[in-house]
Length: 78
Image (tube, rainbow, N blue to C red; front, side, top):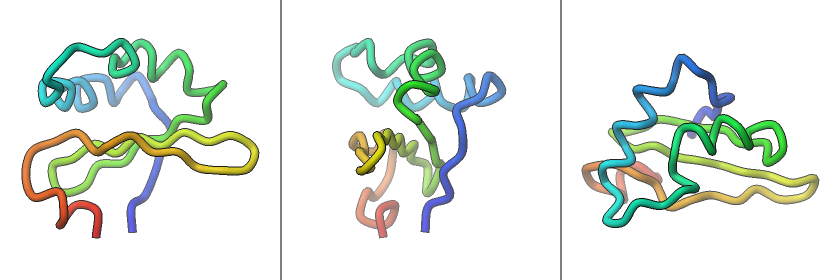
């Protein structure tokens, strides 16, 4: 099971290395946006099997982005 944590300044380099896997630049996938909106969107991150998982939540539900990374996605989400 994934262990999610708060987005912190110390995670910047680790998070940014996953953005190279995006085919197109996307402003939501920038460290500045993740860090800035973390309090409002209750953003959490997790790292597993060379993938970055990003989770947002409101008062009722969790929302996830598609995992960013390199490798076998099936192994990462199981």
